[in-house]
Length: 127
Image 1: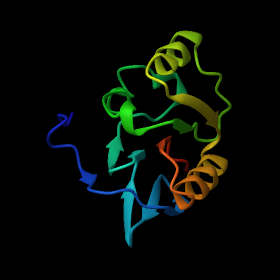
Image 2: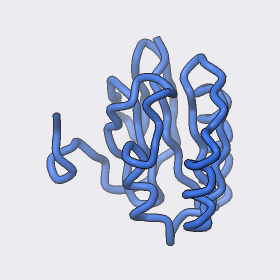
Image 3: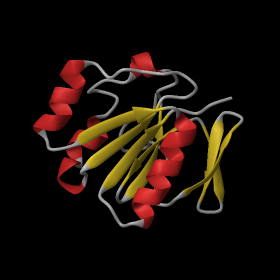
């Protein structure tokens, strides 16, 4: 497993141009696997199913909470209800969590970054 310092990342935000086949396209590149998109970077994210989403998997979001108002969570093809403790922990750092399937999450994220809003996205790759 990669450590926080050697996890592949892209050093700025970017809209997501495409998704599917287990990955994403953004910034004229492609990435296989899930993504964690922050206001100043995009990171590979080891999560492959919603049950793995917790405070630990979202640590980068908590660390950057002073730059984020909304966290969009793309749950792959599944519907996921965020656990109350996770929602409360994010609310405690003033981040609103909005969970939906990955397709709508990407569209919402792209609109919000286009509006220059303080948004992050945790996106589970879909087949």
